[in-house]
Amino acid sequence: MNGQLTRTFETPDGAVHWDVTGEGEPLVLLHGTPFSSIIWRDIAPALARDHRVHLFDLLGFGQSEQRDGQDVGPAAQAKVFTRLLEHWDLERPRVIAHDIGGTVALRALLLEGARYADLTLVDAVACGEWGTGLFRLIRENARLFEQLPGYAHEALVESHLRHATHTGYRPDVLAAHLEPWRGERGRAAYYRQYRQAEQADTDAFQHLLGTVPVPTRIIWGREDRFLPAPFAEQLHTLIPHSELHWIEGAGHTVQEDAPAQLLALLTREFRPVGAEV
Image: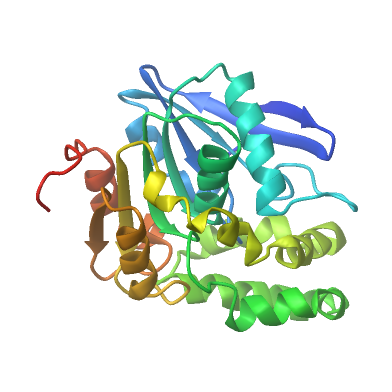
């Protein structure tokens, strides 16, 4: 699988790797955790037929730089993302964000002054008490988890990745998702980003969701075990003008479980605000 990002953007905490493909209306893809831009590999080329698609790896993820002392929490990522939009000279791009990428996109929009043409949130971390279960266990004991031997760490990450999908991964896809977290540096980066993600990252803007100023689409895998259906319904309620679309037979990683259905929704026109659902 070739998903090399050929360009870099320097930040005080390290280099962000990014790339652009296609021509037309600008569109930006954001990934979540524990993933990278690889998750958009089947979606980006199709969108690039009609859009200039920008995609990148969040700092500390994928091909972007991983190092001790980085601030890779969602608040810092939102600031970096806002600077990236300026670097790309994108005034009002379309934005599609998955998982914690939804937190980054919403913080940039509601707290950092970024502007979008429209926003699509795919199984996004955006509201409610999301930092539970294994996520909370890792976050509260990250220093202990960092001491896991390599084989145990990789087994944990692989198990977590498998929990995100409803249909399963091809072996090469699973290996690509796992690769950035291997080795001493990858292991430290994996627990660093969990340690720095806080409930406060979404609490800071949840009360502002009713003011999201752009057409907003919410897409959710019906079988999502990371963020089950009530999260989608709550987000839909908090953004009153939003659309909500379910993808049946898909888990948290709808890009892997149902790429054709996801692409069909991503290429639909937005409903006018106030239209009947």
